[in-house]
Length: 312
Image 1 (cartoon, rainbow, N blue to C red):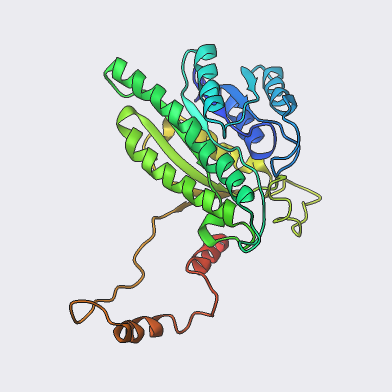
Image 2: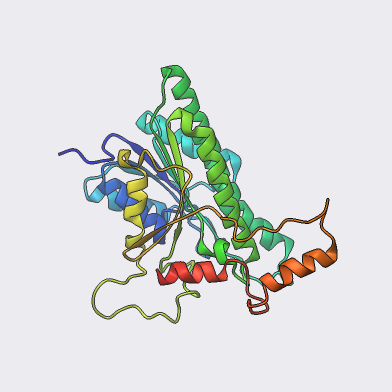
């Protein structure tokens, strides 16, 4: 029996550890040849020397179970190295079919203390890193589609975060980058659909070194599976990368242990019309102030919605 990703080639960035590793293993299990990308720095803030170790170890793990994989240790935040990553997949396996963008770092700080370098570093790896790989994968699929005179097979799965949905007080750079990734996803989904490519984005909740502070108070169960294990996220990535997901495009999905939630686009909560040509301050005060009267001071626009999603 053939596997759903048999004959397909995938790139997974940030695949040396955590979520990326689990996703690379899952894609390989489903039959894909996987290019495991990881820059290999030791610190989750992007500090430390680059190392081939993490990517090589995951690639070796895939090969040990009978799969096909090779390692790439370039920095996806660098435009040229991202080009080389895509070119490597094409040169080794003849084509690229699946791109999973997962690489990222953290430089947590309150907005009033955040340095320019801390802002730039996080935006570079997360948002620019997603763009860089997408740019070259998209060009590959467009060229193939034009040569064939028909749509080709292409899948992009991007990685955002619930930090973008509800905000995260100590992560303005991270939340902004993750929000930007959602915008990049929806734009790319529209641009590439006619070439046969789908582009979706997930907000995973998992216990990794990137989230060790967030889930520090949630103990791992002594028996049974950890609901925050990255392995709960990987099957959704494998599904979105498969032919079965051909009708899913431009979607945002929240995923964690045993739960997938499809997030709708923002809806109009209330609408107010001026009784004259344009609003005055007094008219806005009369209309809007009562509308927010029951909301506690400081509550953000998405807090209630995200709380409901978590409960669901």
